[in-house]
Structure formats: structure tokens, C-alpha cells
Image: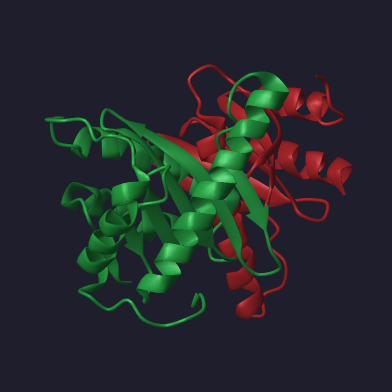
Length: 165
Length: 116
């Protein structure tokens, strides 16, 4: 499986997570929708779409949680006929990340949740010391940062249409 | 919250050397109900035991051996026993390695009848 990371320290924990949980796709992103690492995607446009949708779904679920019980909901699971997805936040000293995982009958929600808890621990222990906290993504530089991240993951290949799983 | 499975799980956990008994969804690997002693990670055991049972069931089926009657995995620091029950449910027991597996097996198969 192709795994690429904008922040190199993320790659080993993500690779282990994908292998252990037998995930088909995995995406680590900032809550703003900017990609940090991906596993299993072959086209930049798929990553960009999945990041935007995952960030939106996570934000929506978080706000619903705040409305319903005063704090954001965390893990979110959707089951399809053959594929399922799990979206949950991973907290580190560098800030919060969102992880989108797609899996099928080779795995189960229980396994994915279990190995996701391991991933969260491994991200915390693998992250380098925080030198300067990243500022919020601003609309003026969001697109240029997004394109830079996608170029780092796909080496300038940003074409293609549709989500290939 | 008490469930209809609570007395059965209580009875299983009362066996000598048994650390946890759980009813797990085979497809999700999530706990339906459990009776877990202090120190056991129920979620982890449930996810792995369900995965193990599912793979055993698929292997037995692929080998044309029929249904899995009883699954036992002995490890250095413990033992997992599992039987399939009603539809998607799997009954799992975690015990000490020195526990009497014969008694656990009888108790599990008896409990399985009430699941069916």
C-alpha cells in the first residue's frame, strides 16, 4: 500500500496502524481539511475530496455533540454494504488531527477502534518537540498550503477524477 | 444496566481461574455484554477474540469441516475460549493458563444453549 506523509514522523505510526487494522484507506488531516498523511490513495484529487468531506463531517458531528451534551462527539462510524468508515480525532502536543479510516470485511469496528487507540499513543510518542505551534489555516494561504501538501504526497501529480478505493 | 445475559456471564466468571466472560458481536468485534474482572481490557479482548473466531469459522468452512464447535487459544499468560451462539454473537471466556479447560468448556457449551 502506498503511504505518504507531509510530516515524516507520522509515517511509521500510520503504516503500523494500517497494517494492524487491515484498513483499506487511511487519511490523517488537520481539522481545517489539510492533509498530513495518507495511505492507499492513488490520486491527489481523491485525497483533497476526502479531506474536505472528513473535516466537514467531523466538524458537524462535533457541533452536534456540543448541542446535545455540551461537548463534541469523538468517534464516528458509518457502515456501508461492503465498506465502513471510522472518523476520530487524535490529540497530540502539536494539536488535534483527524483520522479517516476505510475498512471492509477483513477488519471490524472493534479492531479499528482498538488499533486507533494504539495509533494515538504512538503519534504522541513519535512527535518531535514542538518548536512553533502552527497557526490557524487562513483563507489567504489555505489553497497554497493545500497544494504544497498534495505535491509533497504525490510529487506534483494532481490530476484524475473520482474516488478510487 | 442489567441485560438478559448478565446471569449467564456471572455464572461463567464464577468458574475458577476465569478472568472475564463476554458476549461479542462477531462482525463488529464490539461487546454486547460482559463480566470482566479488574485489570482486563474488555474492548481489546472482544475485538481480537471476535476476529479470531471469525477467521476460524471461515477457515473451517473453506476446509469443508462444518461449523466451529469450540475454539481454544492457549497463550503464555492466559487462555481464550469461544463458542458461536445466536446469529452474530460469540461467547468468549478469558482464563488463567492453569484453569481447568474441561470445566470451562462444559460451562461454555451449556451457556451456548441458552444463547441459541
